[in-house]
Image (cartoon, one colour):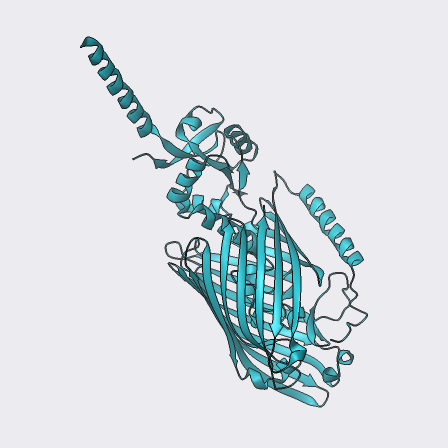
Length: 148
Length: 375
């Protein structure tokens, strides 16, 4: 009986921890810690990710994308860009063709994203909040999405 | 088709030279600008089979397979921008666009170089990116100079673009362009050649105003105006012997609108041509238009159709000089996007070209195309 209670309590504890962890799950917009960017409106973020010029202190903001995290990209597309990934890709193609705007640079890893953000200031990127908090080279400027 | 005059030489050697010039210029400019540049390189490929048949005139019938590669390079570094577009196909290889730009602020860009006219909607929406346009064919009104297009498509000069923010996420943009346009040679317009500055081309000026209710969507309506001074090489074709120049004014409207699964693209252009003959001027005016409807049946399938028509164009003495220009076309097609970057398209059309007289050449077309973009 006592063993069953311990097992039950352990199960409840694990469930609560998992729920707490999920509650913390969020996607954030980051820039380098010395960046002049302190805030960006959702409109400006959408513009930057569609290659439309957004300038801070006279310099164009560069938008960077993560290539390999499908879930992250899906959330970003739905909650910020408001397009499917395919529609977004087609739109970028069209804008590059029409206005000569290079498509946002894609990176393959978190490390590369942080490095690119630091080396190409002012740049922005999106990542999981937990990853952003553990990376001293970047600062969070906006929470883009939070697990309900 | 008449031979081109000696002042407009062609050849792969010249294009190789021009390509080298592009690369050297780009590399040179990149050294002058600060920061880390942002590049993009895209390759648009297409392979098209076409079969033309006519019950009334077997001489019009032919079959052909055409392959095209369009290479687009863009460069961006803070305020400096560059765009180069080179097209290689079975019939031509040409540096289509080659322009350097300065982004004065978020809303204003000035470009210098060779670019596509802003007075044609489809042309500036799709350029040579065959994969991006739903249909295989482009409307006759929007055809390139060497495909019987009735107005200049390429300008070498200066362009300015400015955009005002409207209410909400709307925007109104203005474009102005001025430079050297086309001249009339043989049975087509011939654009200015960057490597032949003394070719005798004259001024073209164009203006566009566009309203977009949402800067993030493709919905837009607008007005286009152009004035084209077109010199004529009188010795290049019998029909041009007494013709010195053409002063062409165009005023057009366009709309491109989405409603859930539907999209409609339409453009209407009024032409006023003053043909300056040795014995006096003749005025010629008409309207050319098209309306294309697209229905997205599913994520991967699109059904589309287009009607091309006009008013008073059948009697135009200007269009008579362009026998390959499309007079009328009724077209239906279907497109299958079988991957994220590749599509197969089938198109059936009932078409009339202007012909050598006021009697049009009439035929039917079947086209099948594979198109793709990489990466």
